[in-house]
Length: 178
Image (cartoon, rainbow, N blue to C red; front, side):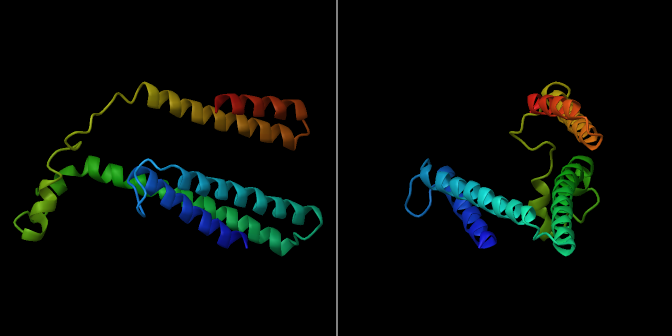
């Protein structure tokens, strides 16, 4: 039942988020209880589903075929995350680098179908968007993220070599880095 319950929890969370931000179903904007119920459902599904997976693994239900299925599931999840971020970066660089194609220099700007859409991309960044220096907070956040990846890799490597003290230290640094 966990996939179905997880789907329902995500729908309730999404509807709760929309209700909180804009109002929905006659509820005013700022109504937080539906969002809280959805998040509680998501947490309940996560703990319940993972509890069963761990229990199945402990009693030997994870045959080699099941283990392959779990691995493929994780690989597909990571691949979907990679493609999600590829899409975001692709969109950013498409708008930032090839901005001239959107203002009619290389597209047919005389075409009435494009005229309105092309006029909206006349300036980059869009009007009202204030840019900030990427070499301060974003750079620090990126360095912290890369460093935390390094420390968790250190902990994993220490664990593979039965160095429990090194693994604990690496995990402590990872948690401290956020």
